[in-house]
Length: 159
Image (cartoon, rainbow, N blue to C red; front, top):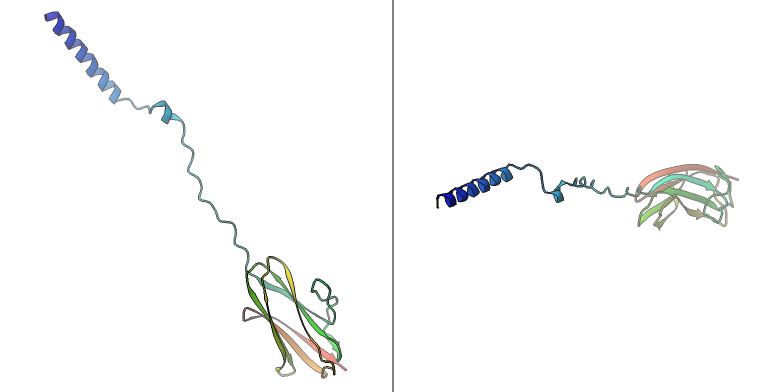
């Protein structure tokens, strides 16, 4: 019986020591030893499309199929049709362009508006004509984008 007690005592001691040894183990199990992938960088949203802006206006008496003035002018004949090509860049689901034509001291000749939905560089055309001829003098066309004046050009009608 004494021999049996010693065996149980020895076995108990071995189990106790193995338990302490297992508790002090610092290595993670093999499944956790693989390096965890680094956290994903936050997804950067695609760059916002630039808001539409007026880049230039062109004045002339003829226009091409792409709505661009064929030859820029600052002086016109009295029977010319007057064209302004508004060049824009950027994107917008809806933008409003206005061309306001005035004579001498601000007398309104014509004002017209177009709604555009550009997706990049674009040209928008405005024109005015007067079958009996324009009075000689100085004129101005002012272009607005969404109600804000963006560009003006002065020009002259000669006899």
